[in-house]
Length: 223
Image 1 (tube, rainbow, N blue to C red):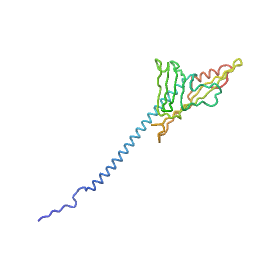
Image 2 (tube, one colour):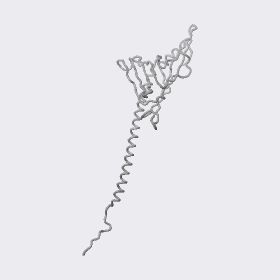
Image 3 (cartoon, rainbow, N blue to C red):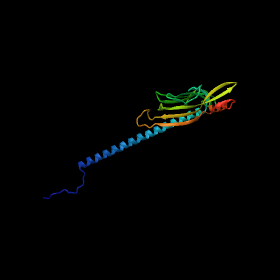
Image 4 (cartoon, rainbow, N blue to C red):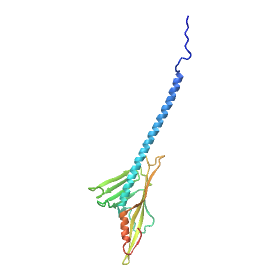
């Protein structure tokens, strides 16, 4: 009778080896998936932050342009009628209203921060806001603006004495702007604030009016 023997070197994979390989493969897949999720989340965060910064820069550019063209007519904050003293600060809530010489007219500019929704809105009303026509247009509107944002006004005084009568005139000659942006949500944890500042925005028309008043006979003060 002939007997058959199985070769000891016969190739094959045991059930235990298959289980171990499957476990290792699962660990690798889970790790890769987690890494991809983190990378995608980071890309979205960077994209959102870049877009938010673009909006913030657009708002700052609109504010700077409007303040450069501002006239001496200010509704809020009102130009002081006594000694200027310390710089005037406009913070939470922000509410600036003034007229600006934009070439095609002197429209009213409104810069307002809604402290409840944290939305900053810049509007222009009247002739000069657009090339043709009138009405109100929104120059910029951004969300997640922190309530610590604000403006600081430098007030200058010119005193003119004529026939024994002294007239004191006050001007907002420069404005410091600070916009603070939180993304993606105001007050969110582990979110770095972005601050955009312009410490010296000269109100050109107001500066000219101040210098013109200072050049009059019997005038004193500074611009």
